[in-house]
Image 1 (cartoon, rainbow, N blue to C red):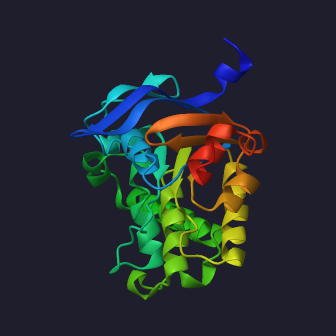
Image 2: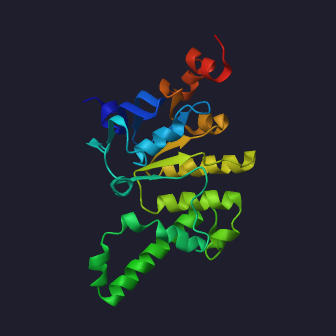
Image 3: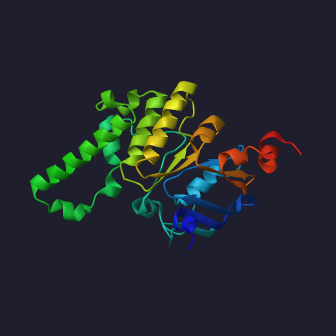
Length: 259
């Protein structure tokens, strides 16, 4: 096995998804290496969200194979995939309005808790308190990481669009994932805000978390991705270094309609 193949943390082989007569993904082979930021881009309707939903188990009807850390996860339920170490965000932040920021992030710690519900019931009270305090401290540190240290007790329904996106990012990290899929993390943000999120994404990568970055923001992808895959009409048309992508005739044709 080569050094490159040793470093592959996620790969798809011949991944196919159909919705009736529509081919959403057509024999897609993508490899994501450990500790990289892997950009996933393409025009509207290219299959990016479908790919993400297939990886995270939200699409059950699919063909082909999906491997994570050398083990097949193709047919696993979403919660099992999350427990294996894959976390994600959504284009529209999934925030619980009635909970505080701290409580929202604490709710994301469930897949990293070592004890199950039944065993927790039989733990001595001081151990249950210790576990809760440990989760609370972890949630606090993640909220601080995304720059919201003054918002621990702020209600989810009082958050701005950007605060919702940042809180969602903190919560996605609460389960200590090995692979984090970010779906349009800078949607609706200005240039300065996008730069801040780009810096945050690199900071998360540097902690040992592999990232799949899905975005229409080409500046964000080009500046922060180690490698990029490009989808068009459900097919992969490029995979490689961002600088090489800029000279790909197939990518230019997909985006610009050039011959």
